[in-house]
Length: 125
Image 1 (cartoon, rainbow, N blue to C red):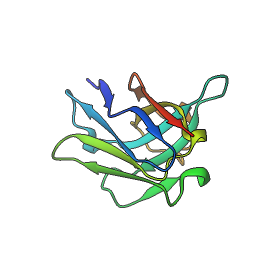
Image 2 (cartoon, helix red, strand yellow):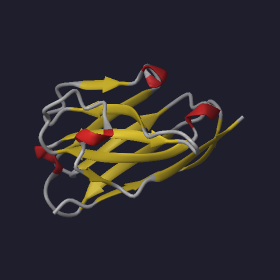
Image 3 (cartoon, rainbow, N blue to C red):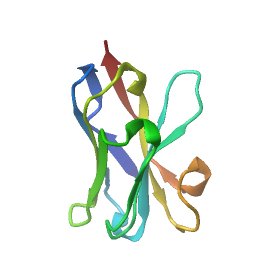
């Protein structure tokens, strides 16, 4: 069973940093590629970052390249999103998700079978 739980959200001033964590108490996450998405009010859910099962590959959306880093610790069954140099436009609910099949590029929410409940990130100017 996969039940993803995000933590680490909160409020921060522009230029600050936050680290989100995503854990699962059930089935190991090491079998899945993992992704982070975000959704701002009135907007569609958008891709943020993705990491392969074996940490060999990581991909980022253009708006976060160079500022965000996705990583995973399979021994701890946890995936992280380190967010630096945060901007007000990064304000959103952030979701982690598990891609069971890894058949596509992983940029679409439809490719992910399991989702966390979301963590609010608010960046003030």
